Image (tube, rainbow, N blue to C red):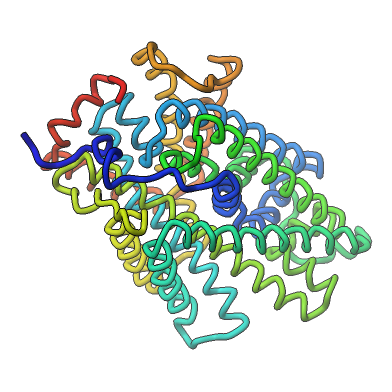
Length: 460
């Protein structure tokens, strides 16, 4: 008999404890989703929209798709509360081979890429205020990775407390930009027309939705704290619904402010639209404020991603003897220490890689998006599989209008998978190549014998 504990056996001993409050979970979810993207993507969305109503429709549709996904995740998370989140659902539905690939992709592509990108943005904008020299952004990013990793190793309360503080500043900052935009008198159409830059297009709604849902991305991270959320069966639905309602409201309001102040053409031509708004409202001081705001937004996203990302590595470390060093939970700090250290190490490597080959925002989208939407689609499909495979399990929450709601979510995910492949190039190939390395590793690693019961789909 193997001495390696499965993730579910670990739950009874040195394992996640329900110490995360509803407020903590909402702050974590909102903090992941509302990042630097909301200050970058609106210009790209406006440039590919035929009218202002197209912009509003796209952001509202993004909220609706996110709600459908949140309903799917609510059923999965309340039925199977587990630190592994999607990893656990994919294991139960499809077995360890597929879930191993997901965990590998999350550790090497999805989460670490998101952390690195967010902290490069953090470094870019902090360098506008105080530069550290030629490699200032990379230095700031590396230091932030170390600091956030140490912070989250120190204890779950330290990690969530910091997240609550950063998310509060982030949300207040978004509200400040909204107010500034609504205070500004819109310029004359002729002045906007004479401004250099791209003009709105009427032929790229698919691309619009890619960027919209990229900006909404991250709400599913709530599933990774389901094992640590107090009264998860009652509070998970509340966390997801309130988070998405808050995010959708802020996104619609900030785009209203952008369009009110600059119009559709002006928003399309303003690459750093938030900076333009703050400059007009507050002058040069506004530029410093927006730089600090975007830096804080990026740091907020990175901290939340560090917090949730290591949970997957912990779960698959429990299941695979070759990676069991990742499956150790510290009862003293209530954190997956080794998983956090490995995650931080990979992110540091990506920072060094980015110093030489960094191509910015679009490259990270290329690298992560196809892999991300592929596994989101499979997670949606897992709900149908588990409904059939484990029909006798009590489900505290059931998706309304089943099967219509999850079918619509899966169709939206498939469309985003297609769009992310259609609009990407070498970055997507790199992400797929890293995923292929994980497939090769499957030839040499096997799950714990005692944990193979998951493949039979029995209730823990």
